Image (tube, rainbow, N blue to C red; front, side):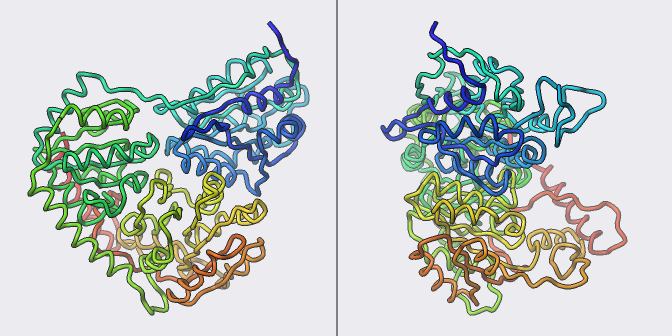
Amino acid sequence: MTTIRLTAAQALVRYLAAQRTEIDGVDVPICGGVWAIFGHGNVAGMGEALWHVRDRLPTFRAHNEQAMALSATAYAKALFRRRFMACTSSIGPGATNMVTAAAVAHVDRLPLLLLPGDVFASRRPDPVLQQIEVFSDGTQTVNDCFRPVSRYFDRITRAEQLLAALPRAMAVLTDPAECGPVTLSLCQDVQTEAADFPVAFFEQRSWTPRRPRPDRDELEAAARLLAGAARPLIVAGGGVLYSEATVELARFAETHGIPVAETQAGKGALAHDHPMAVGSIGVTGTSAANALAEEADVVLAVGTRLQDFTTGSRALFKGDDKRLISLNVQAFDAGKHGALPLVADARVGLQELSAAIGRVRAPEAWRARAAGLMVAWREASARATAPTNAALPSDAQVIGAVQRASRPEDILINAAGGLPGELHKHWQTSQPGGYHMEYGYSCMGYEIAGGLGIKLARPDRPVTVMVGDGSYLMMNSEIATSVMLGAKLVVVVLDNRGFGCINRLQRATGGASFNNLLADTVHAAMPEIDFAAHAASLGAIAEKVAGVAELEAALVRARGADRTTVLVIDTDPMVVTEEGGHWWEVAVPEVSERAEVRAARTAYEAALAAREGGATR
């Protein structure tokens, strides 16, 4: 057996550089590059190794470890999990800064390779700088924090362990059911230690998506149930996009006349103007989709994990005659909510389910019902997003301005706060991936970092970031990275002077406005934050606009700009779209001195009772 002597770090990056995939007939590296912030835990080992492969495996320097891992997560999502990026950090805070991003990737089922530095395997210099010491366990380090948010975790204490760890990591990163973050914790001395590796270990390998076919019995049961439905509804989740099954979804809906609603992750699986599209579903859903969900007798959920925002905290899909079919590549998800499981790849599953039910179509009356509801919803959405002269426009009105300035090829990204609800309802996209929402973990700070990752993944498509002032203040440093890399973004900052979304939730549950809007905090002075000046200091073009009309004009200028542009607009923290939406379970205190809380508790208990009155079976 021919071998080559390499350090662990050299072997790791050489192996990564050899892994390939095929997209649209083109052979490409499956790892799009490595984000790195160097420190004493990785600069000598990983830093030196990455320098030698920089022509095959590019290294990008970020300004914040959480941000770079969020960029890598967004990169994978934008490419429908077909490619991923790796992130390396030093030990200590450099490593733990990435834990939040790992949780995002874990919840959203996205491939992310984390390579945090760790303590010395030899323990000779213990305790080293930034090392925690667990008095009862000498094997623990801060990197054990990654265990619950990793699909696969390994601590590399000998170079030879990579021979087993790296193929296992790749298997998880490319598996449609097990996909998620992988953490290889790299002891800093081991990174620099050498071993003899088989040359064959570094031969190129191409990874292609696995497409499991449905079990025959599950397929027959699902086909019988769906064929007998009088009022069927499809709920499309992110799995439709990850499976690249959008064509099959459209064909299925057209062939069988079944309306399609979309989750946050699934938005864009069907073009917004498709005849069978009924928009978003659940807590942030359209009035059309939610009315159909309540009336449907069979719901076919495709590629969704059916979290509470989709199901209206299990209150939306109810009724003695309602049944749920869950087509999902992951059996864990397919069995939720008492569903009839159909474990399969979304593309293959839709093809075989369509063949199994033959020429069956939903009744004309049901299709007409869906069409009529959508006419009413589109009118309501048009009113909510219409141009305005208001000094403080609503989020929906700003969304309308951004929409009118957009083009079909644009990608819109957001993550947390009040904007996801309004965008889920109102944003119109006709291309898969045109709507990029991180709402599984609802991670504030994802927006700008995520926008950077999208632009690296899709350099040919304009990327617009919509972000609230709260999220902007949490994480904005990658504006500078976007300028540095020439990865142009258009960032629209909606400044409602605080955490407006949670303030509204606080009041809806009977609470008084407290510690959310800046005006309702303990403060010696009210900060006057100049977001435009701040963004300009990071290298962006930036301006503050007064109202929707100025924003639309500024968006036109931003499209022609040569680098990242940040546009800031003041907005109303209290106004939201009244139409659409659904109840969401947020527990209200059972005892309170405030009458408003007691009233909210009464309403909460009534909603719980109504939910228990019917359940999906």
